[in-house]
Amino acid sequence: MRGYLDPGETVRFEARPHTAALFRPLSRSLLLALVGGVLVGLSPPALGVVGAILLGIGALLALRAVMRWDRTSLVVTTEKLLVIHGVARRRAAAVRFARIGPVEVEQGLVGRLFGYGTVIAGDLESPYVPDPRRVGRLTA
Image (tube, rainbow, N blue to C red; front, side, top):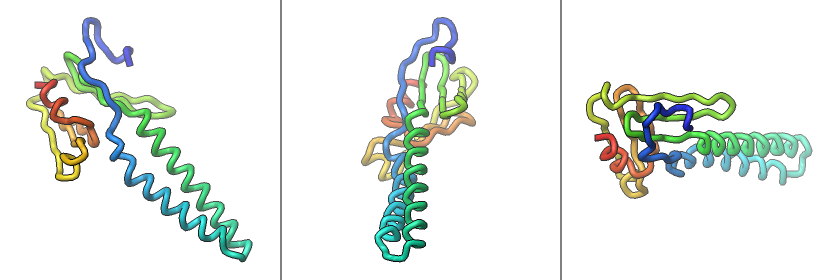
């Protein structure tokens, strides 16, 4: 993370996406695993093989989703907003506060209940940010 900072720049906020970001991909994986489990339990061997394949695909998709979530972070420094992501290939997108207007925060009803939202800074949009109002205050 330090490789993305300029000299004298300090980190004011750093977080990975809210765990709500895992809901949709993990629910798909769970559905595949359930279907696979039912097919494995059925007596014809051909269905058992298909079920085992579905179980494996569900597990791989779940692992991929968790790894992506774990390797993504939002960083607010004294000078910019960074989104760093990627597993095999790390990527970073940054917006300097001096070059953008106000930072916007969007929160739906579910986001307000669970404490996450989307932060929009210029062309950079980051969903599932925990405590997005705090991020908005830090960038002002």
